[in-house]
Image (cartoon, rainbow, N blue to C red):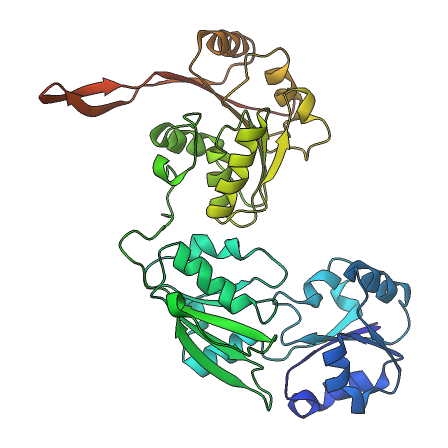
Length: 404
């Protein structure tokens, strides 16, 4: 039997709700929501109104403590599209909930603009880093981005201009569906809209200038996109390495000896559900990894400053491990093997004879696949052109089974 009702409500308040949704509000002993939600639904509330607490987890605990009582939670638009419904569903079974969705801000914005939702990117930047938009900045893309407040649109416009998309059109849709609804547009590089309502969503028609920072969808991104000091897995080897690591939905990677963070960053770019931990002993390189992560739109990359294997303690259990630096240090490969989940993949790239010797010994004991990677690039030789070979790489790929 359901004890929890979740009601999506828009700026049109009670007039935009169906009879069943209004009844759920009226019959509830406790009604949770933001101050704006409680005001919009005020005429229908007969129980005890409770505003969201800070931190928000306290309100979730309060809701769960009332299990068995009649509780209503008010949410903006569709509670299960970047909303509180998604949070509550991790604690409350669907059979115990009644949900009354309202059109989301994305739906309302798409309807106003005539943008088919299935053809555009929908992204919540509410309480999240704006850098998350960077992987989606491609010429011709159309993006709907929910912001946190009145500062979000101008900050987004500045990001677009900095990344080379300054002639993109930013349309700000404010207080959609209510009496204060307002829709205005500006060019990103000349963004001058003022007095923006804190409740807004931005529609971006992406236009790229010639030097725009477009992040291709494939792995093996151009080395020049990364800030590095030469300690970077080069693009051709990186593409082969990502292929061997074989990222799958929801998995965790350890990038040991991360250098510039290129492997961890491209792992996370492969899918939004992926997580990575970059382990780097050099603080300057760790700071560089953080800057790279922001500029590639994966600011949630976890960075651990320390020397493996000691730095590997208490990290989330990995589905895949990449060793590109420090692998010849005592105990590193052994610690990685021990930490890997069953079915997990370990990929180690050796440039030095010392790491290669360690890998060959592990291969003799455990098996796996050895590959020699040799890349040569055309370069100037006097007045002509010749092949200049890069240092060859020995790659060991090993998959952990139940017995290992």
